[in-house]
Length: 360
Image (cartoon, rainbow, N blue to C red; front, top):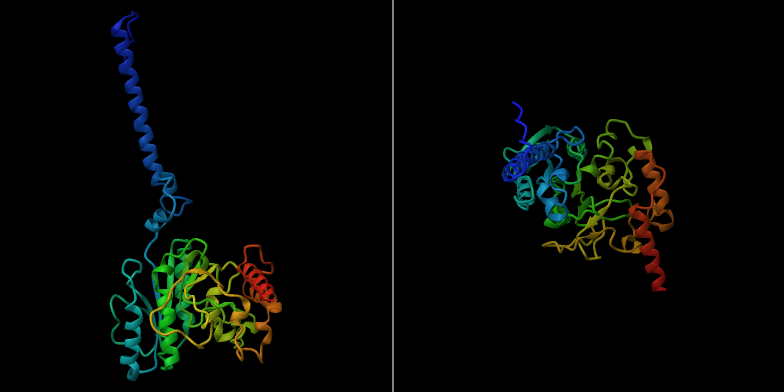
């Protein structure tokens, strides 16, 4: 029902009536604004069903807002056991590695790809996602890749681990397994800065970009850009990439190169010591010393190891061939032929050349 017209008189009654009407109009407007903001806060962004937190809290930026929105790190584990006779020894390896999980940072429901003999039990909340009688790391890497393709967001992170040493039990594998597991599951990697999209104990640019031991944490928006890890096994890569070549990261060695194989990789690593860069040489023992910085952290010459790839593939160690080889692999894997100014290799080379000049 419409309100009666206000009396055409002056005085206190007219002022009170007009004030009441203004208050009613203001209250209706305020209710509308609150309702609109509430609806906008829950409106799907880009049609993908996520809430528009930036519209709801435009000032909530920075580390605290990012960490609050980030889910726990998802863990993928490649488990190999040769036979039932190895079960106790292999289970000890699994327990050692998964014992480093931090329930505050990591999703303790570890997704396990089991290969060979299937263990009768797994520690904690780990579960067998799939089992294969035979196969390699590319099976689990595909699980990582598929998960990230479905969750291609920078605040979604994954860790890849495997039971290194379960096939060849020796001191060298034991040391390297401990060294790289500690880094992949570290607090530093879990809270990696925005300028990094992959983190490990040690990233080496030579003889191809990789982490020896192949365990790391990465952001899903980066992993989602990589090739299908099973592309080689399924015959979908050029033959040159299928022939085993440890110095160029090809054939079965592509699994170790895979995580650093895209030009948009922005690596960070943890270990400050120069005595270990890659392979199995001089791997540190004991608790990992951690100092997260952009990788590669050393100059070019520090990654050239005598005798490693020097005879068969000397070009993989020469600075003059570095850009050519990287571009060749990017073209074969991703059909990318040009490198932009943000490519990690430029800063690495410039710093190495500058330091070499200073030493003369």
